[in-house]
Image (cartoon, rainbow, N blue to C red; front, side, top):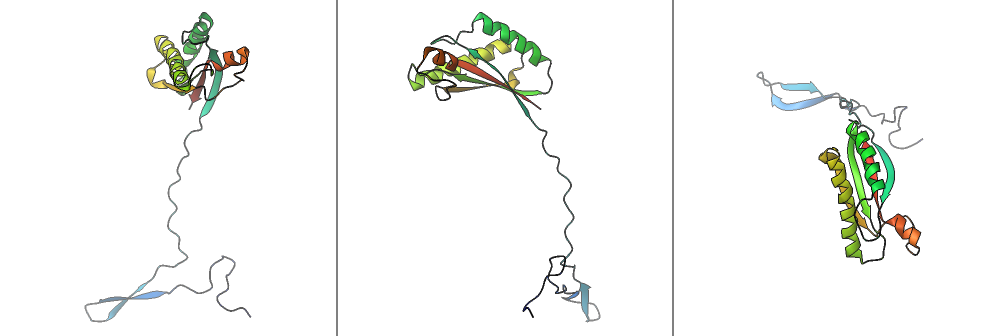
Length: 170
């Protein structure tokens, strides 16, 4: 024989909740009023269903590459940005375009941070000029902190001098 209350198939203790509670206020006749106590098994009403936020889609576009120690967009980058801007202007579901500027390691960290920011801002300015709404564009400078290739070779450094573009779609 087990001591103490045993759970039934609902997982609740078999002890019944108190069926009535005595109110300490007296009625006009002086008698005590007895009111039923709510069942301990009653659960509050479930809150209204909360809709989850819509899923976001992240589209990573190929990066724009830059020459050494510059933030000037070359002709190939300008043509690509024209195509991207044409697409973005007609996409109502686009909620943000993230532009992340990067640099190689051939200069100091502070200098590369500024250079990366100027690269991202050059892309932003061109997209604005091409009609992309300013509230969509967000720039970040990562400097030399996120290389995609080794910085010990010239081709590796060239791939690290870039602006990455991410389109966020609702």
